[in-house]
Amino acid sequence: MVEESPRSGEGGITVDGVAVGLVFLVKLLFGEVVNAMSGLEVVMAEGVESMVE
Image (cartoon, rainbow, N blue to C red; front, side, top):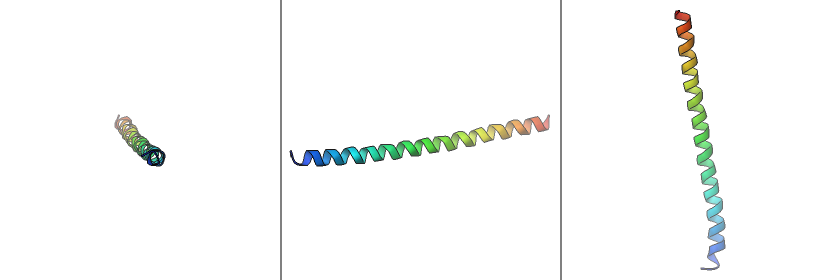
């Protein structure tokens, strides 16, 4: 029990940290892509409206 704690603790910290980091990066990238796409849609919609006028 005492011998396993440091190993599992270190492994848990690194694995959790990597998993959290990956999830955070994926969410960040996905959010940026969604924001960029919605931003492009808004720009295109405004451009079309100004062209129509």
